[in-house]
Image (tube, rainbow, N blue to C red):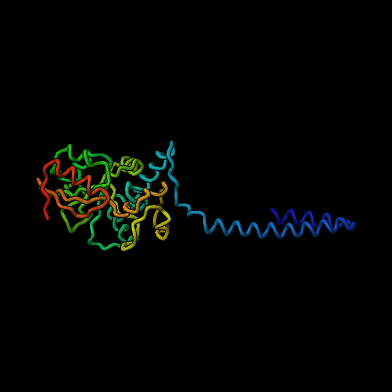
Length: 270
């Protein structure tokens, strides 16, 4: 459009011989070149600095439910996405979809023998996928929160998920967006940190930008927490044995979690 306008002006003005017209044409020529350089610079800036089309900002308000529905649709369709939790950013796939789970391992370059946790929306959902060994009130004291609880898995869980173990880690993050996504899915999601294995766990989406093009969509709610301790991830506790617990990973909620477990008279085992 700019080029066409410049051509018309030049044609009209070149028909006049007045010196002022020639000066004006010279000025327009300078402006034209400047605008072209500016346009090129703007395009370059947009190409380099603007997030990819699959990065979606999740802000508080009515749009959150809409984004959650779209995220759930992507998961149910077999895609892998990234989204925030209460500790760090994670990548997720539908736990009952074998291909989607395999893609998580490929994207992260994760050792296939390392199990994945699952994420559910409500405490009541824990009973569908794990054989709970502790009082319901204990679950309510820890969940939702930055804790992963390990139980014997039930037969309802996809047998191809973590086939090398009869245990499963179950999470309910204290983060409403991911819980809403899981509600819309109507099924648990396999969840792990959104980073290539051996790299730091990410607190913002920019920290795993190398994975964006491998993900169907990336939901960005900003930086998670101000403390680097968040990178430690959730505290992981094995509750598969009645009356006892085993610490698998200290994580960010170690003090609170162990206090609750001791209040319920559970014994720490190595």
